[in-house]
Amino acid sequence: MSEMHDPGRRNTILIVDDAPENIALISSLLRGSYHTQAARDGQTALHLASADDPPDLILLDVTMPIMDGYEVCQRLKANSKTSEIPVIFITARSETEDEQRGLDLGAVDYITKPISPAILAARVRTHLRLKSVSDFLRDKNFFLEQEIQARTRQISAIQDATMVAMGSLAETRDNETGNHIRRSQLYLKALAVKMSEHDDFTDILEPSMIEVLYKSAPLHDIGKVGIPDSILLKAGKLTTEEFEIMKEHTTIGRDAILAAERLLDSPTTFLHIASEIAWSHHERWDGTGYPQGISGNDIPFPGRLMAVVDVYDALVSKRIYKPAMTHESAREIITQGSGTHFDPRIVEGFLAIADEFPAIARRFSEEHELAL
Image 1: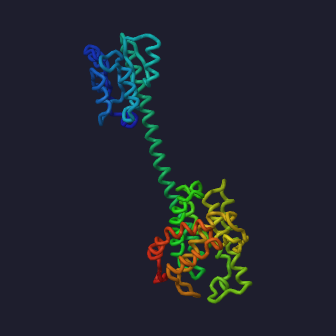
Image 2: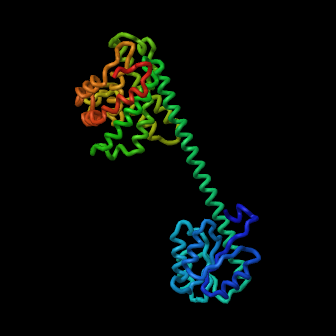
Image 3: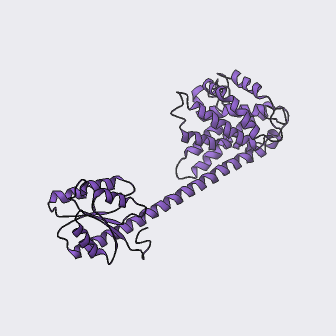
């Protein structure tokens, strides 16, 4: 704790000198205002400086046996526990190069002997004040960093909850359950982690991008809020005209997310990925999907990932118009869609981890919604 934090506390000065008479002299000059410690060699000085209650300032002689003051200073500054303790050299060496060497090693000041009591008192007082300010600012910065991290976590949690809530709002108008959101998120994250091992996607799927994909997934069907209930909730097969309207949920979703992004000062990766997923997760590898009918690598990669997990969850989930399918049957259908509906590389990754999906489905099933 610095002097600024506790005005009633007396600072501790460590005096390092191999001559007892020099220690006695300096101690007598400082004893009225400060606590003093003494060390007659470098090793003892290093030990005292790194103790649980370290000195606030060190007065260090240069010429000492075994370990001179320059080496002591160098070791002090190399140790994170002692590097912030100010060091003032007090020495008979008065050459300019000696002083320069001491300052280059990290000392804050250099006093030559014989000692002037007034000069010593003024320099000690000045550097203790500077240390107090430095300690205060460092403590303040640490506090602010902790506050920023806490606020960032809070904002991130609010963002996550908002995205899930918005996605769930779309799902409440459909025949699907809110747990479709959670399952899709976890399927997508597991698949993205697996695909990050593939040479074609290693550069794309860094951990931060996988987290963005995970957080963006709830918005993949947000556009369904713009589809009439007569179509969205229809139990039977949609007519050609109705299906054309249903297809519009991809564009509605993308446009809604882009409109939100335009309200921000700068584009965000999160909303950009969310818009890609919403717009392209119904595209097909062979170009027969919608809304654009693009094919192959022209389909945004996030949309290609979501296509696999969205179809899987649709297959194994009970709907008003169909029973739930088994995991094995769903896996077979996705396998058959490799190279037509889905990116073959993503299907390969899916098959490698497909056995993880039933556990996710069971964890977020709802009233026996899934039959696995």
